[in-house]
Structures are given as structure tokens and as C-alpha cells.
Image (cartoon, rainbow, N blue to C red; front, side, top):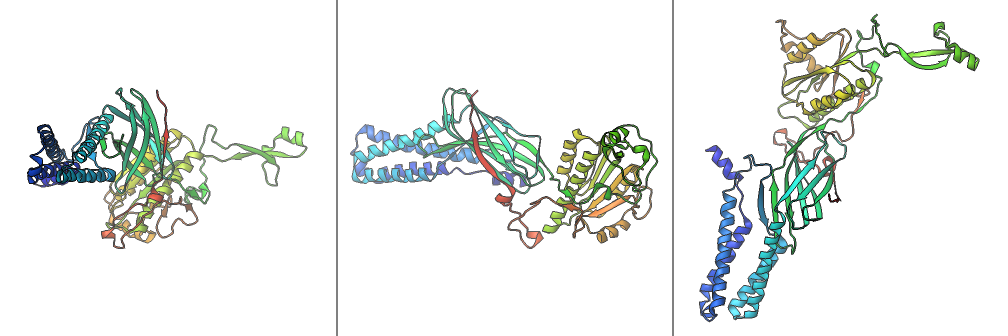
Length: 504
């Protein structure tokens, strides 16, 4: 019963079919009502009048029944199957009103000239719908998308339309739907001419500001050519997904300051390779420098003592723990804390990959569910890390046991461990005693080799600067339970329609 109600709610109603049905029935009623005048017509005119009336009535019934019995929108459609639709714009409605006035005047005044004008107008209306329908046949579309999109960065999306028929397509509008959990956007590209058996490529620029997964599609073709009084459209179920990655911010402190007290102790570890005190530069000798570091060739050349300076670049692993807690009905600041925490983690990992190579990176997040990512870091792993950070979700949880156990088991002596939370430090300390470790020990405790940063209540002030327009809401209700998020088209989405034509 619930499934039937959902299917009924998803069905659509055909407005053009209703108008055609009313026009046909009205013409039959007028013919019967004013039969004193219509009986004086010749046989050809009378038969033509009835034929037009019956055709309008039958076509209207067909459109209404077809739209009502159409498949619900949630049923999976074929990728290349098209759903044709008819829409009458304002110009077409005015055109139909003029046609009706002409027909009523011809019936009442017995003016054959008005009836002839009505016939010519009706023929043009039908011809517009027939031509626009044939323009949409045998059209294929391909979309070129990047694998990952950085939030806030403009991205070009290319649409290629292939005309697989001899007939040239004129003034074609291709509309793309961009949807995620919170917003629905539309982007349109206009192709002025696509020759027979030709291809054209158009593009639009989009700037997505929200981290997560977006669905692009379906694609809608539409045209009003040649008269603009009837708009025919075809929907193609061509859907693709794109992942929008979190934006990194800027660290306001040196990376060596983000170390715990245990990690500041020098360890006598033997390293072999380019990253064990690698050469940095040659500079002037200063009091206290090691005489063994004197570079004698440079000293002889410049006639002053010059020493070799080495840059300490010890290999170290990185572990980032994310506590993405949010209440059941979060406020705006709490939603911003989640994005700030993820952006801070992204910035730390990016800085680590820039300065340290071939080290192990471990990420664990606890929000809606517990998830982890652990591999040997490097430039080739950056896309994988961004994808992981883009898809994690915050949630309501007060049990930090999964994060605590992951940290206890996976940490090593040369691992830099950081915990980033969306709670305040006072709230975080209260949750320590609510869990139980895998060994059965009551309560949770973190030792000195773990740095804890809170993204709430200014906990990152002086350490991290978040990117601009990290998250924005418009027309947000003061009551979190009644909040309906409406995204601002200016701050969340910028589209620059452009066209790049080229036949192949």
C-alpha cells in the first residue's frame, strides 16, 4: 500500500494533453451548439472540422493516459532510453488563445476567411511540434568529468552531443542536473547548430563548495525550433558521479611545533638515505659551529670560513584520528566545526606529504560509522586520501573506543599522532570514562604522545587558518529541528555558460 502511494505521488500530469482535450471537446460542442450555421457548410468543410476535433481529443487523451501510466521516477531507467515530453511556453499559450478566438469568430460569423486563418495557424502549431520532435531523435550525449574536484575551485565539464541522423539540429539546449544531499543545481549549454552525422562539444563551468558526492545527470535535450510556440524535450538517463574533496587551509605554525613532548626527544635511530641530515646550503661560519662542517673549497674561494649546513629531515609516520561528533539536531556552528576539522586534517596530511616521503600515513574517523585508511604515503596516494576525507560523514556517537583501540594498536615509536575533535576539550574528557577497551579496562586514557586539537570554540586559533567560504547557509531556521537548508547560488555555485564548437 505504501509502495502504491509512492508510485502515485511520482506520476506526472500532461498539461498539453489537457489543453488539447479541452480544445477538441470545445470544438465538437461549438459545432453541435451552432449546428444551424454548421449545417450550411459543404461536406468537405464539415468533415474536416470533425476530423480536427476528433484528432485533438484523441491526442489529448493519449497524452494524459501516457503520462499517468509512466514509470515512477525512482525506477531505474535505461541509460540510452529517452523520455519525450511536450511543453507549451507562454508564446504557445498566447498562440492557442488567438487560434480559439479565430475559430469562435468563424463559427459565429460564418466567416470562411477566419476559418482559413485558423486552419493555417493550426497547421503551423502541429508542424512546429512535429519538427521539434524529429530534431530530438537519434541524439547521443557524452560527458567528460574529472575524477576528483577540489571544493571551491572552478571546474570545466564538457558535453559532447552526437547527431546520428541526416537532419541538422538547430538551437538545441542541453541541461545537466547536479544533485547532492542538500542542493540541486542546473547547468545549460546552447548549441546553435549540429550538422547531420556531426558532433559538437560544449562546456559549462561549475564551482561546487560542498564536500561529498555529487550526481550529475540525467541530461535533458530541449528545442523550440522553428517557431518557438511548442517546446519538445527528451530526458536521457545518463548519470555519473563526481567526488568533491575538502579544501586545505593554511598552517600558522611550523610543522615541528605540532609534536608531542615524547616526540621532541631525540632518538638515536640509524637512517640510510637522502633524508638523514641531508645537505641544505653553505653559509658563513658562526661561533659554536662544528669545525668538521667547514667547506674548505668555498673557504679558499671566498677567503672566509664557510660551513655546510644540514637540514634535519628524519622519516616519521603520521596518524590522524578524527572525532566527527555532531548532535542529532546540529546548529550552524557545529556543522562548521565538522568541516573545519576535516580541512585541518587535510592541511596536516598535505604538509606531511610535502616534507616527508615514503612514510606510513594512518587515518581513522569516527562519525556516522568508524572507518580507517592506512597506506604508505606519497604523491600518488594524495588522490586516495582526498577521496577518503571527502566521503566520511559526521554522526551522533559518544563512544570513542574504536578510535582509542586503533591508536593503541597501530601507534609506533616513530609515529606522530594527532586527534582532531569537534567537541570541546571539556566535553572530550567527559567521554573518556564512558568506554571500555578491548582488554576489558574501564575508561579511556590518552598518553603524552598524542596531541589533541579541538575545532570547536576557537581551539585552532593561532594554529590553523580555514579557507574562505568553507561552508555557507542561507535562510536557515533558528530551530534546528525545523531547519531547511537552502544553498545560496552565489556562494555555493557559479556557472559560466560557454560554448566551444568543433565538428569531427
